[in-house]
Amino acid sequence: MPTIYMIRHGEAAAGWDADTDPGLSDKGRAQAEAVASEIEKRVGKKLPIFSSPLRRCRETSIPLSRAWDCEPVIETRVAEIPSPIEDLDARGPWLRRLMSGTWTEALTPENTGGGKVDLAAWRQSVVDALTGLPGDTVIFSHFIAINVAAGAATGDDRLVTFRPDNCSVTVFETKGDSLALVEQGREADTKVN
Image (cartoon, rainbow, N blue to C red; front, side):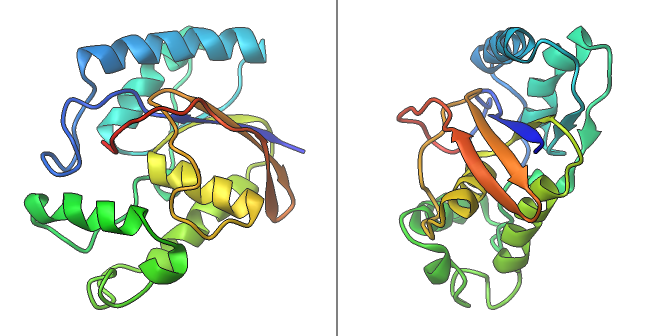
């Protein structure tokens, strides 16, 4: 069974309601260095590295990619939850409202922009990306995507099953077309960024 080390990106330089694709803050870059060392010690061998296409994940993957002398594979299916809202001021409240509920509630026309985004398909694509991996892999991803995987592994319909801290490592095993949660990542009172 392949083991997946799913890492939330480091602290972003701006929040979800301030920038559509922020890079890392200075603290986020330090967190990326620390998690690279943690993974190297923990895994003990080079593994494939996948990253969301968003800057904060790509930048978080740099220290580990450099240490293992490889380029991360960009995987769009582990990117952040798509938003039907273009206005940055309105995106934050939309996401906070979603995060307090369940996927059943999130899939209403009100939350999908009248069908502008297909949250059900996105949610399934996260699970498909993980269950389709042929071997052990490190993935740099996002708060909600990690929660999608945790919810799929535990049968929990809530959008937020736990609050992964920046650069926390959540470990899953794939079992054919399903996921098992091996280790929940470190939690923090953190904002989504």
